Image: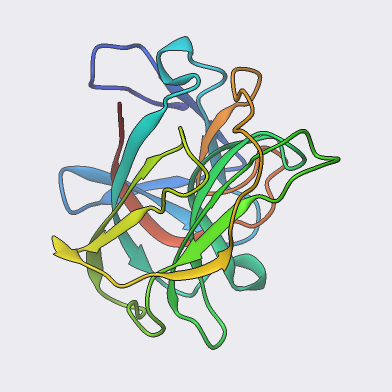
Length: 193
């Protein structure tokens, strides 16, 4: 069908947009994203709004590191001042990246962290996870790949307080406008509080 169903019981069903294709996955069916414009948009689920402590997990298999080397895995972000992003970062990095918005888009600095360089490659399945507590700017996320804790590079240390993400849509595979898209398979995305 045209939907990706939420099996958690929270009814965070997503609309397949621009043609992600169902394929055999790591756990049942995965969605294949084309690295051009495919996304799943789950709207603005209240069960995922303003989670102070969150863990995002997924199974991923990269064909490349995505559009412009920044393929989004999962995202609840308005691109300006609120929300978070969990993505793969190619180029010389080949790593996971997590970004969390702080402030109002005019003041403050957003948090931005990366797993070690070359911690990911194309053509194989990875179970990836990030855990983050947004209640303090001194907190840093924890990255996991295939269950193993990863090192961390801080690219930007956040300032001021975390902004509300209640007006931001949850998307899988890219931004709400279909940019920064993932290229490959994504399976079993989960967001925990």
